[in-house]
Structures are given as C-alpha cells and as structure tokens.
Image: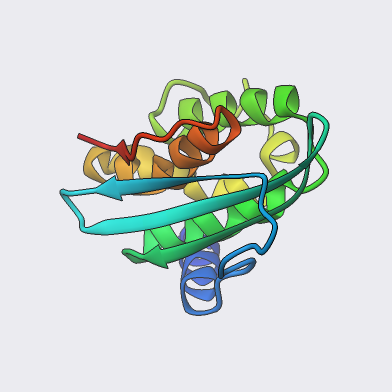
Length: 151
C-alpha cells in the first residue's frame, strides 16, 4: 500500500471516529439539510457569519466514513474564510474528487488536508459521499430551505 493510501485511510478513519465541529451550533445564522439516499448519509450544516466571513461552522448527522470525514475536514477548512474563498475552495475540491484536475494543476498546499480525498475520484459512487457536506454548506450560505439531495 502506498504512503498516500495509508495516509488517506488514517485521516478518513480519524475524522470518522472523532469528527471535528460535530453538533448543533447555537445562534447559527443559517443551516441546511443534506441527504444522500444511495448511501443513507444525512446531515445538517450550521453556519455563523460575520458579514461575508464564516466565523463558525458545525455539522450533525450520520453517514458513511467518507461523508463524515469530509464534513469534519470541511468544517476545519472553512472557518475564517469569506464566502468567495469558500466557493472557490469548493470548486477546487469538487474538481479534485471528480478527477477533473491533476496534482500539477492543484498543488497539495492549496487544499491542505482535503488532499486525502483525491483518491475518491477512482470510485465515482463515493464522490456523492465526499461532496454532500459541501453542497449542503453552499445551500446554508445561500439560505436555501430545500433539502440538498445527491440524487
């Protein structure tokens, strides 16, 4: 097994077992619900904003290891970022997990720990698991009342 695959497994398992920023966010400015009927993942993302900057983000719900770890790592990556920075980060993340970008185009430093999801592009059915929290977070940013679905 390659070093990258070992790291991938370690990070995913750690964030699945001990998700960061897990639970409701009292006083959240917005929230959105997400559902992946294929896998059974369900979550709610909560955001606290100061103007156009995310000051806090949390999630709650249940899902597979990829979904939970993605939500956990996403919450760590978003704190302190502006809406514009978050939209750009999501676009890069989605391109990476769908295999539409290469390591040369997006250096690991740009995505940090989120790089562990690069291998998801080899398993198209898992892309929905990895991106559910992200789509749900965008719905919360846009204050959409509709449940986000991967189907």
